[in-house]
Length: 79
Image (cartoon, rainbow, N blue to C red; front, top):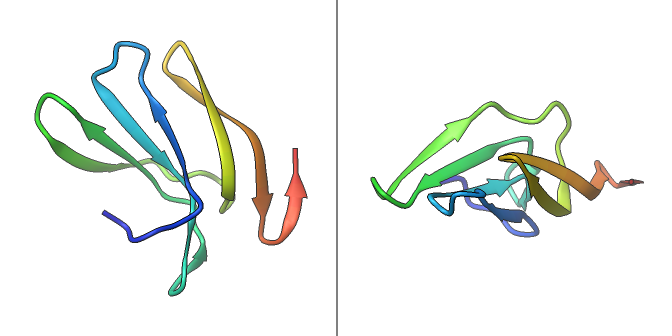
């Protein structure tokens, strides 16, 4: 439940979990955090963070693996 904007959202392939990836907030700037929401238990969980903080991202799901397709890393465009 980290306050954030400019994040990516991805639904798991079995439609039971939602992933919120990266983002930006005024306190921390770009974020490394990844959160998972379980639609069955209706609970949020922080999972392993990304190595690099990212915001304005796009994600795609392939076998439950979220792939960052485009992001901005601390102000530098990364593809």
